[in-house]
Length: 173
Image (cartoon, rainbow, N blue to C red; front, side, top):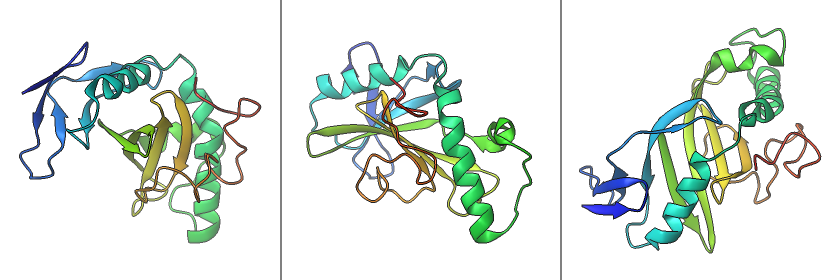
């Protein structure tokens, strides 16, 4: 059993991944969801990982609203490429077709930390939805789940929906 300050106890995954799985469920009011943390490297600096998790839990109100243009762009592109799976009249309906995942995967690429959430959406049942926050509080990806933490190695949240640079719909912080 491993403890991370302010986040509770974590245990090694029984599935053999070697990941640390949180024993507690945490609410993320800024996203309107709850879930547990999964740390993909138990040998990582737990103080830094804990800080990233706490920043994620502290996402401000309005983050969901800032995600909406990116979800809408993902919906429109999916409909254009694959045809109509779900008909939505406008961006204000997009959240009704999304199920945000309840496991928050925390991992590191080089010196950069991410919180990665595999989610579902009715318009793309095969590839679903991936939401990624760099350092726990900066939105860097909204799009189909492909396991990558960015779009083509950039911080473009979703091509065609603007850039998460503070001048459009993001960042989340």
